Image (cartoon, rainbow, N blue to C red; front, side, top):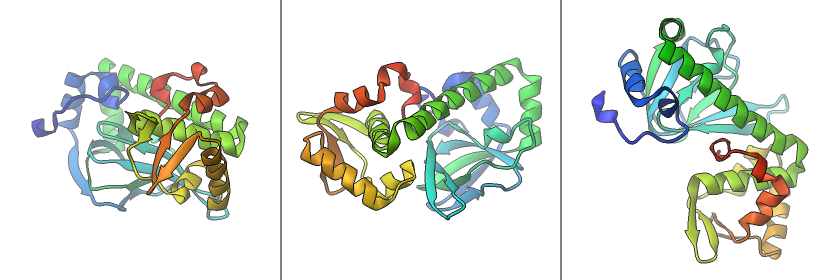
Length: 238
């Protein structure tokens, strides 16, 4: 397992519980692999397993009663996955889909609950992690519910810039291809409404799009609309 020891990403579950405790924990699980588009678990399914991502990325999705797909959150290296079902026996809240080839550590839910209950380091770290995740979810819901469709798009663009942003002469390049349909799935909108919002932003010189790469020329404009000064940076990623 030591081959997976890499720099700890700020905001990851590993950074919350500490490097030594984290690598001690993952030694107690089982390594599993998923290829792109593999589903680790489905929304509403029995939560038998909890995961930690070693390599790769996993997207959490929800589907509305009308069948509309909503991208809720993206989990990265050293993040905990399925943790909302710990200590309560609830079914999975989301569908978890690998968005690239991914390697994970899998734990039996009851086993992990026992480990957390027996270790102050693990239990305290878990509470901090859940608190951070709740803060992030509340910030995301605030943008989606109170800022309207346009504000929700602004929010996703700011989050993408925080995660993939690269400073260039003309502003901030989101160094990750993203389609209008993906943006629509993140904000629960139609692709047509995303097209209209982006067209207005392009015409106003706020951003530009080149072969699915977005460059934000006036990031402060988006942040002022969302009152980003009230939101901690750690909570503002995809």
